[in-house]
Image 1 (cartoon, one colour):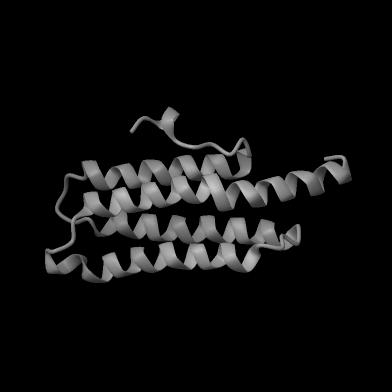
Image 2 (image 1 turned 60 degrees about the vertical axis):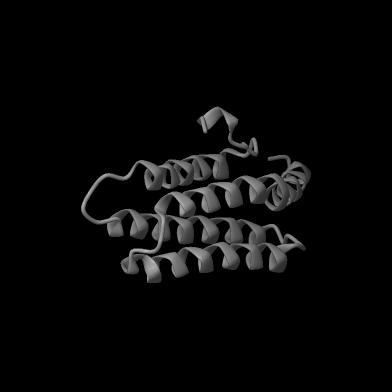
Length: 129
């Protein structure tokens, strides 16, 4: 899937992070090396950073849908952790993880992220920023 086909929020603060996540996820499909561990660790670290960034913005702007959004994040993070915990058994397929993570991020961006971005933009417009 080309980058241009991926959903953008029009909210630079998160679009930049989303694009980096997509590049990381694509690396699962094209990975060639002896150990997938460093890539999985980078994905885990950046996913945690990204989720924390979004959640901090939601707290800052008192987004009313915070709890539901956080639950979505916890679901995706749990799937990633489960994959990582089982990656040594040889039964895990990195391409399947990429499909899940990319699909989840696209859908999550179109729905949950779009909602909080709209909320923040309205709050910022009141402040004139």
